[in-house]
Image 1 (cartoon, one colour):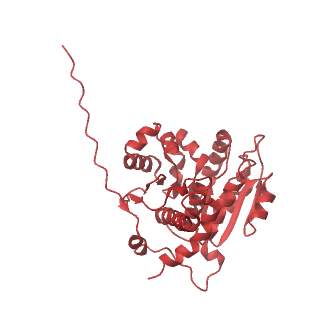
Image 2: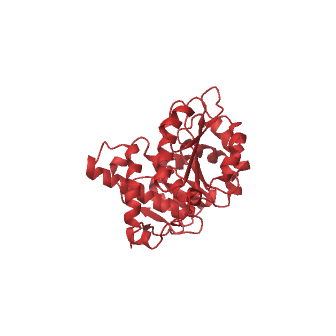
Image 3: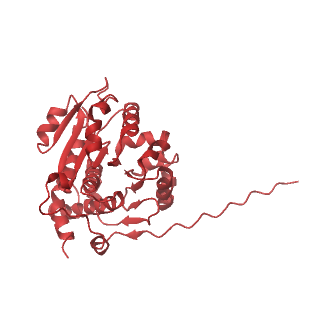
Length: 309
């Protein structure tokens, strides 16, 4: 007797994304510092990353965090590049961490800075970090001891999650993940074509799997958090597809978290500010050829315009 093929269950419908717009952001204003407040009131940021090959990545991210309004800026990077990073970002306190033979950040460095990590309001891990095995060891130590700050994971820091999705359970939804399509495919153990066929469904799968805010980067960037609706950013231009742009975006989101924005709000605002900065630079410089390092300089003006009634 011939067996019947099992019928496929229809996929549940996915929600229609809500386009991020000026009216939406003005109805969802960022926390504003008290005029009498000091830099501590605007929150501490700690950017962990960089290395001999890409020290500039943590410089871009830290600069963007400061431009987003964070009050106190700190960077933790490899011992070999720390002096250069400190000179490049004079506003920051820079911690020199031990390195492995490959130049990656050694896991033993977590113990050196864990107090600073837990005193920060927002921590970014990933920009410019190399050697996935070393990153996994570093993050395993960090995730076991971090308690309190919002945590943004970017670039190679996302690699650990594909192998250990339960590693974020102690963070209780305080985490923002910022994958592009290739990284999202690794996180969900699938291929890029599957992600592109249904980006919204892939986004929601990642949100559920990691219990985190997820920013799926692309020409149309999608954002969601556990229990939230899906947001889509349609602003920006092709010039944003350039080296260092993702580091800048991650820094913006982290800086907004430091100011007191919840992770989802910081992600939605950060993505829109990043795209709008690209649009401003395209008008000034042309649609191609502007640099990621130029994006942060546009942010204070954009924030001032968006905060006007």
